[in-house]
Image (cartoon, rainbow, N blue to C red; front, side):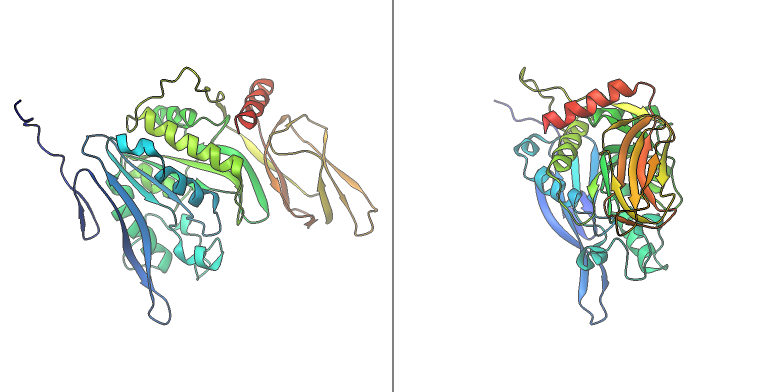
Length: 342
């Protein structure tokens, strides 16, 4: 039998490393040093298939205290299906290594890394880290998925945020397979904005809260990453008749935070994923004795997509995040179906 004359796929270069077709390798990209000259590195795993296909980065912990994405990437890299990968997968479980080691959202100078992109080689620590991530990871890809949670003392319903002005990005957001898709405008200095300017389509997945692992969120995020990989041709499509279809996705183009009208102790009367109507009580706020109770009413119909998780609040604090949809009943049924699949 004659041997195939098909040329070998070109090697993948990252940093000073050369990864041959068919190779899977973990590597470290040097970022900076601590005060005592201990070097810090960006941990990366690259799977460079022999078969042609897209290049996808999956990243987590751009905010160092957001841990669900780290676990999602761990489980993604353990999937046997990756043996049939087409293209190149770049997994970065911890981008903000400084915040991760300090259990903090921020960099040591209190900057938010997700406001430092695209970065520069001569800027602040955050700017330099952002530049390294853009140069060595993002710009080598055609697609990206960035994994997040809510900020400290807040939790989010599993949701995808993306700039839906681009039809292909909207399609990817819906393919991810969570019911709530938020049209989120690009912010100056964000990874999504920097990727968009380079022609790289990216999604941001949100779910759970900082410094906590949430099994339902992790499963939803893992399933979403795999769904996107199948959709763009990196993995074969599922063919089992017993495979459950993901819940339908619905787009919200408006969301808002309800803020505490009084200071005191806050108690939520609803939960993330609940459907709420205008005038309905969302929460109550009391003093330390349980008196002077004030009800917080819902200003508009919608679905709760996030909320504060600690009782003490000051007047003006954001306590409940609500998204509006055209068909609230269908959205609520899809959320219930997602929870059943967990």
